[in-house]
Amino acid sequence: MEQQVLGRTGRLVSAVGLGTWQLGADWGDVSEDDARAVLEASLEAGVTFFDTADVYGDGRSEQVIGSFLKDHPDAGLTVATKMGRRVDQVPENYVLDNFRQWTDRSRRNLGVERLDLVQLHCPPSAVYSSDAVYDALDQLVADGAIAAYGVSVEKTSEALEAIARPHVATVQIILNAFRLKPLDEVLPAASAAGVGIIARVPLASGLLAGRYTKDTVFAENDHRNFNREGAAFDVGETFSGVPFEVGLEAAGRFTELARDVVGDTLTPAQAAIAWAWQRPGVSSVIPGARNVDQARANAAAGDAATLGPLFMSGVREIYDELIKEHVHDKW
Image (spheres, rainbow, N blue to C red):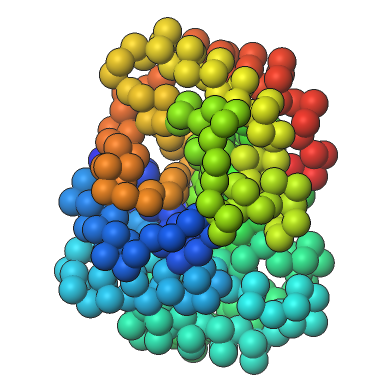
C-alpha cells in the first residue's frame, strides 16, 4: 500500500483508508460482526487510516473502532473522527464548551486519551471564518485532548477558507470522477500550504463501481434511497448530487474507459479509487465497505500503477459531457 503524509499531522497513512459511515448508519443494516470483519480485512490489506464521526449510528461506528483499537494496540492506526452534527446547525453551537463535551464523548467511544484528528463535520459556512472557533480548537490541542484538527466541507469556498488557517491539518472534501471542481483550486492551495486532503465519496455512493441499474433497489434506511433530493442532508453526499439516471449513464462510460485503459488489471471501482488518491495533494481516499470482499478490493487499489493522462482526459470528457451541467456552483 502506498503511504502518504496526512497534511500537517506529519503522520504517514495509507493512500486508501476506510470510511466507516456505513458501519454506523444510513447504508442499510451492517451487523457488529460484519463491521469488525471489515476492519480486520482492511488492516490485513494495509489500511492504516480509519475515518469516522460521532453521529455515525450515534457513536456506534466510533465504538466498534474503539473495540478494534483495544484488540490491536500496536497496529499503527490513525483514526480521524468528526464532530458538530449532533446539535442544531447554528454557528453559536461551535464553542469551546461544546467542543470539549463532544471530544470527551469521542474519546470514550474510541477508548483513547487523545484523538489523532478531529474534523468539524460540515458546519454552517460562517464557522469556517470564525477566529474564535480556531482558537477553541487550538485550546483542545493545548489541553492534550486532540493531536490535530481539520475540517470536512461541502463547498470549495469553505475548503479554501480553512486552508488559509495556520493550524488546520486536513480538509476532507468530496472528490471523484463526477466531482472535479476541487482539482481547480482546492488541491493546489492545499499542496502549497501543506494541508492534507482526505477525499471522500470516491465511488459516488457506489455508482462508479458500475454495478447499479435503473432497477436497483436500496433499503429504506439507505441514504441512496431517502436522500436523493437532499431531504436529510446535503444532496451532494448522495451520488455526488448527480441525478441517478444521469449517474448510471456516466458510470457506464466510466466502466468503458477503465476497460479500455487498464483492461482487467483493475475493476472500475478500483480505477476510481486509484484515480482519486493519485491526484496531487491527496493524502488518503476513504471509500466505505459493507463486507470483507469490498474492503479487500478497495485496499488493493492502493498500490495501483499510475493511470496516466489518457485516463484523466477520459474522466474529464465524461464529466464535461454528462455531469458538469448538474454540478451545483457551491461544489
